[in-house]
Amino acid sequence: MIKLGKSVIAALVMGALIAGLFSCQKDEGGPAERAGKQIDKAVEKAGQQIQKAGEKIEDTVKDANKK
Image: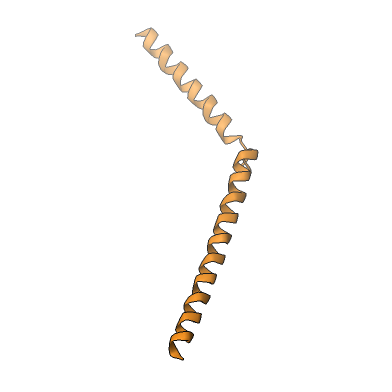
């Protein structure tokens, strides 16, 4: 019974230490995370540009069909 109590206390202490370590981390992340965010933004921007180009093509085709 005493061993179980010590194990539980040790587990709680370790959990508190681990939680403390994770709460101290900055939200900025490391260089890989920042690079990933920049890539995400670039892909999103490229997707928007592709969508705009597609809309212009649709408009051009509609105009050509009217003539």
